[in-house]
Length: 212
Image 1 (cartoon, rainbow, N blue to C red):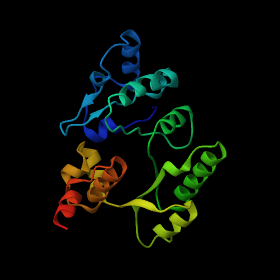
Image 2 (tube, helix red, strand yellow):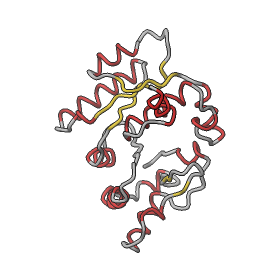
Image 3 (cartoon, rainbow, N blue to C red):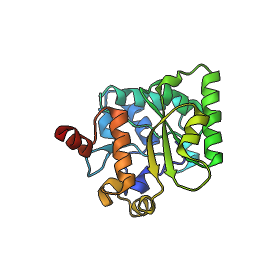
């Protein structure tokens, strides 16, 4: 909500931001929620964060999730990118999610933060069965292996995304990695993750299934 950077990573100029979409829905409750999203040439739609944290502070979670619930009613896959930790926005997002993807690096600080988050979720009675682990920026010879992370967090990783300079380059030019470097290891991992979460295998995975 406060520091989203999707618009820069995708090179978008949003027609509505989160705060504007919430206000528009308040004025016209019957509006088609899909019209409040910004379209990307690849075919998906995005709702970007407010322009700055001051504006974001004026947005309350009740209004945000009225909008989210309208979007859920469209019956299309929705990805909500939450900030680290637990707050009213992340709690609301997780309560509505069929799958919660916990992203962790293989550095000690990232793993410990992920462990504390899982412990907190457990203490407040959240269902951890929906939590799926994704390892990001995985590097060899850093002293902590993927299996070490899985052991500490008590769950297997459904996906591992290797450290790849092409990820930073794609964000800097505002183009998704799966289009700029579709054959890179990171792009293949991202397609795999999307397929696992949505239940819709990526095109290269479908091709493999059809030939086996």
